Length: 273
Figure 1 (spheres, rainbow, N blue to C red):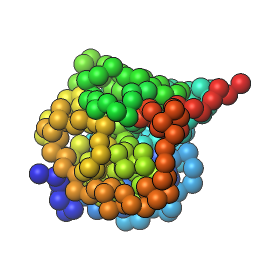
Figure 2: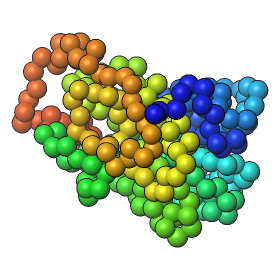
Figure 3: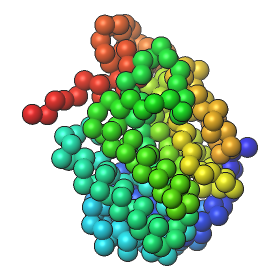
Figure 4: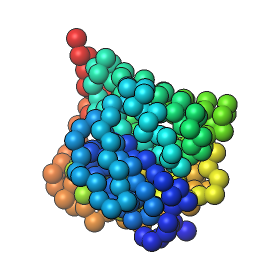
């Protein structure tokens, strides 16, 4: 069963990176209710700390700052980094150098579990008429997806070499409601996001796991069977929003790559020169 709203996480001292972002702001109060200390970090300004919180502004590419962030933590929920498609030079510092810094800090400070916010854009060049699972080869749809594929591979290396467990969350589209037809398949409610993160932190053994972050949608391109050991059971669905999404997009151009590939609009962004 999925963790209940009151289930405490086994990591009593938890680091949340990317806390100023859209999903970080959603998870911050939800995770704070489940641990004794929540340390939140971002390169951007954040709300002042509440009871049981520490707020640290830091850049992921700053190795010393990241090591200080991780010190004393039991687990990490890593949402930090660039979260949209950008030129490679903009992606590199936080998403590639930064994730390396995080895992090296976890190794040195003996953190045993990380929940890594990957992305569905790791497999964005699969077609929308395919159902795929986490064992299939990655097909990134841009530099952002490529950076998340790097993070998944890096986390697997740190598990195989050093035993640091990671759950890679290939997050779909987490918004209050689906914005278009594509999101009828990729939507992840905020409540299911919380359920997924808590399941990833509370499952007794996760090893190196990859799970797609989606709600219980009627339309789905992703098979999460291999991640059932996490105990994640989504309880929301995009179906109540179907009529509105279809009204906003009454027709699709089936020659348009954004309607062909799972990555949607990301497959068309760039080049940046």
